[in-house]
Length: 288
Image 1 (cartoon, one colour):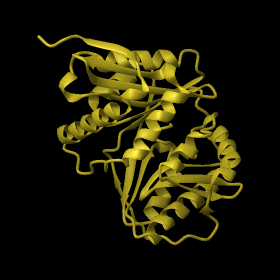
Image 2: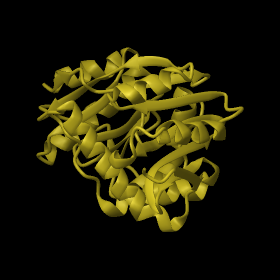
Image 3: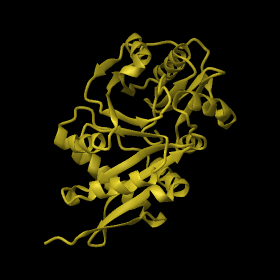
Image 4: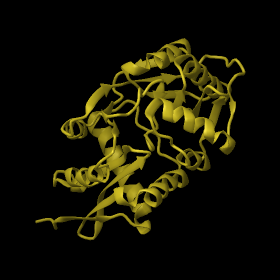
């Protein structure tokens, strides 16, 4: 009989084990679902930077499961200006089926008690979607867009930096009621690029992937996303744009103009409570 699963707050010493367990869990998910588009492995330094950031800012939302002295799973939740988000939830494949995912989710969810709004970005794992729907959350099925972008920029979008944080915070509060703040700086330290349309909006890209995109209005969001895809085209990169829910038809139009292909196996956005208009907005997988 296998040893019982136990739970405790996450520690700094867990970072590498959490990263490795997360990679095993999502590789296993891709195999089980027969995914044609497995996610590329993240840069190790960037991945550890994300985990460290959330452990530092939200220790109350950081939990691990152990079995027989080995890490068996992890949940990371964050709170930003009254908005709760689930940044990570996984159970190592050998420990799945023992209720660890349910227990980790319960602890992460409790960290958001009293939050005005909740956001979860879900994979296509049926078990995960069932668990999130049972929290009373509203589900928004999503498309993704992939391919080689054929789009030229208009010069309105430029590279950004820390000095543009006030713009990103103002945009974030307009579209979701809460700023990412220094979370974006962690993404930049990990190798992502901030692209800015002054006074209109911004995007964060990592290689050919759009990690976040937001603007004050749909016209600005289209400009920013076009600039991000043109940036990738100029670098000779294939593009990947995800979390294209029905609220983000503005983004679907841009992706079609860039000759990207749409696919329907892209997971769901779950929301509950006051999350702002949540548009025009493509959320961050790590920071919601």
